[in-house]
Image (cartoon, rainbow, N blue to C red):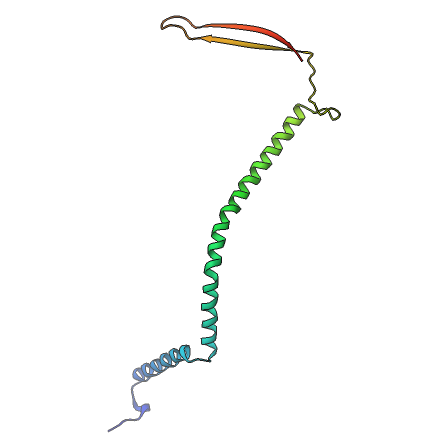
Length: 131
């Protein structure tokens, strides 16, 4: 003898409705023409298009990092150049560096390695060169 659905205990009715909901949702994913299927196909196409773009971005990240390193190096060299230009100003007319000394004094030092146990000797030679 069959009993009416309303006569079933409430936990069994809940399981029945839960199973029915799962079947309807699963069918909604695979029935062609429904919005869920269309959106899923668009998502898969976008993911396929994204893979090569991610590879390109990964290869270009190296250049971005290298650019930042080069930029910081250029900034340091610019500061160094500015410092050197304040120390040694250039003559604007001739393009030569000013030398305030009419003569330069050069000093050469020779170091001799002594035999074991002997003291170190050094010899200093001074000479002047005209500019």
